[in-house]
Length: 176
Image (tube, rainbow, N blue to C red; front, side, top):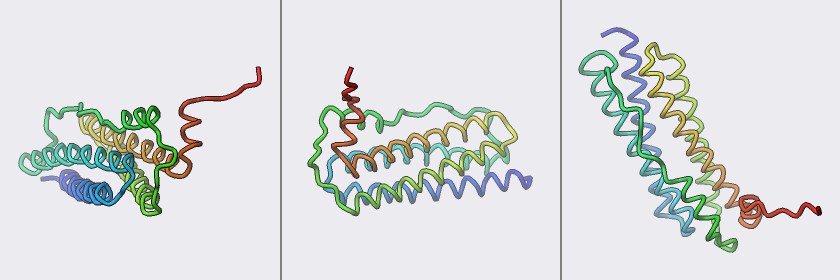
């Protein structure tokens, strides 16, 4: 097995560890928070992390056993429901919902997780020799980006629910 293959196996092991730790983090905070939106957001991302983990685990197994990137890698994944949660929140927002400091801190930590994951997978994409490998890591990087952006939106909601609602509903008076 070549050194590039060994590097890829190690990178996938790091990815598996990261996905596992992130899922545990999201589940812990889903159980802890009393904010219904925070709970739903953490649970949705935790479920997405399971799919990431399983895909990466399949690749790790194939690469370890065969010593090369598999010929076929599914480049579609179950869509995340995080955006749908945000859209639902717009129609049922409770601007008086209590947000605890722990929720805000957890969301910021999660944003940092997802940003690191996005960079990690983008770096793997950029250093990959094969188009299949690049496409796979591009897909995972894009999913991490979607999580990060959704979490940033959640942070904004937690900081100022009424202001967040005004922006999302685009209710503006233009004086015209």
